[in-house]
Length: 218
Ligand code: SF4
Image (cartoon, rainbow, N blue to C red; front, side, top):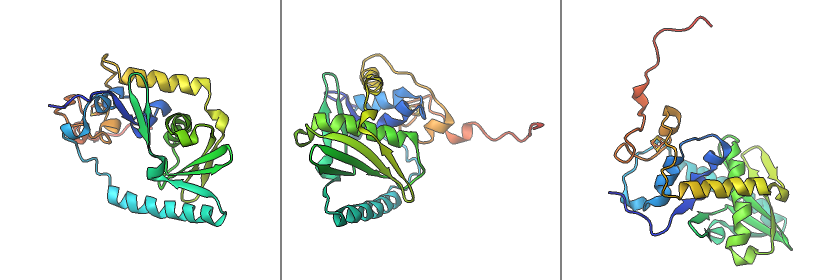
């Protein structure tokens, strides 16, 4: 039986695809936010975390070395871990790198995969949360940068506006409330979701929709 958390908790990447519109099942984020992670079993999603970790660390070290050559002051991963405590929930995350220059800062995330709108949302959440959560960044105005293997995406500081903040706060309130969130099973989302059918009986397993043998006229 999954154990309830004392207070709802959200890890940033649980909500980025909901905010970008790539995912629709808010119930998955609500379940994780309300229950202790160690208290329920999980499906292996086939994600090769060891391979990802090695590639990500390689890219991160490369970026860090370049920044050090430029003489920048850099704060790395665990130094940037934050818990932003709200009235009803705690929002948590760990930006890869932070550089500070006076009252201006850059939050950098290294990504080894394809470009995605959810990566931008992740950076926007960090830009919103870091100055509020960590006193050493209280007066810093942050911009964001996503660095892929062969591309960079820049996010200006004014991207944190009222509209974004309102959408973020509303989503957090929805998924941390006692009102059940929308559960929207689909093979596309369920295959990347690690909640088992014990906790989500509506889960769609991959062989439930076999490919039709006939083809259409187009
Ligand atoms: S298994 Fe599918 S329906 Fe169930 S919570 Fe995950 S994404 Fe939603």
